Image (cartoon, rainbow, N blue to C red; front, side, top):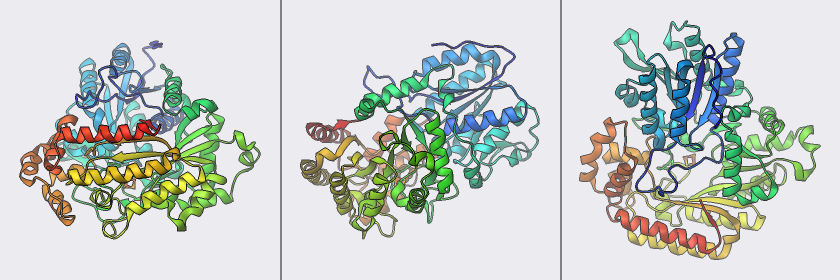
Length: 537
Ligand code: SF4
């Protein structure tokens, strides 16, 4: 790795995606960490905005993007140690699986030099912001939510100029309030910034370490169709949020309508999107930077942002129209199964025919009505009991197969109150579906439900009555006494052992099934998927 220390005079701000902490339940010995196939768009957006802010103020700080999912944390730590004399700040993108590793790295950096600023953000931090800041003296600042890019950039630049006077003026900032005995405080986000954000500068991925080449190799390994076309993919965002983030939230701010495994931080606004012109400008910017395959990060795009897609089709820009159809960029997006209902199929047709979407990642999750209800998959909590979501799943697969779309799908093989009988029902219907439509599937993930902090499923552990009530509505059972016995741990701890979290969820929320049964069942489902020639990811 080429990691030259340029000049001690040039200060450096490192934006970090740490690799996951090891799991004894899941990790193969040969694979100590799982490389990402696409860059961390949040860090790239922060890095682009920060560079702009620093340059506008005549500050020469170097901004470095470092994704340790492609290098491992040892490389990251070596880099930070070698660069310690000029480090100004280290900023971590947090999700549950990399929180412990990130905290340990932040503590190590503080031991190297306590003056280096440490900053955290992203969904994994937003889910536990208060506990994390209370428990970890090594964390100087955090940012809650997504609409924090300008607040972050301004804070970094103000720290560099030593002119931070009022911590209350940085949107989304989480801090120890000096005016209130160091009490943990949090500023509101600023959703208005969304349409002011700069076009992402993807060259950040080619800093001291060439992440871009590694991402490309991983894309071509995991999606052979991209390799065959020589496609170069990146993540883009022109809208954000989900219909299900609207409505009431629980005491921890988690939307009660959300799917119970969903740990996306909804921010203060359920949904926000660009206009069609800006969406096309975002695409054009990425095309001009050499990319031609776009993973649109927007949640459930055809359902949540149909008016925007429709306007994009009406206002196709000349540069795109002038490209030969084969040269136009292609797109992959998330879609809910109910976006494929008969009365919405024109949306899918428009996306495929006019906007060049060729792959839909559909969270099918399960193949029985009771499983889908248990995961709160309905469009809202109140309609969860009345919609036939199994029918939506089956229709979605059939429609995608008819249209020649490729499907990536997620299957979740456990959930609140699951029983062996429910597992068998899911298996039988999935088997039948694959026998008829296996050719539509590009890849499938098969997982146990993982109760990430920030999800309703995690809150079953810190609010056991919510688990008992949700299961009771479906005639299912939880082990309420067990959940009560672990409640304090999940209400108070930040350094959560991710394996223990899964085991506690299984024992408390799925008492009719052992962890061994769950893994055996996952393996059976995986074998079924593989037997149809579908790639498991
Ligand atoms: S998982 Fe569910 S709640 Fe989360 S973004 Fe998708 S549809 Fe919305």
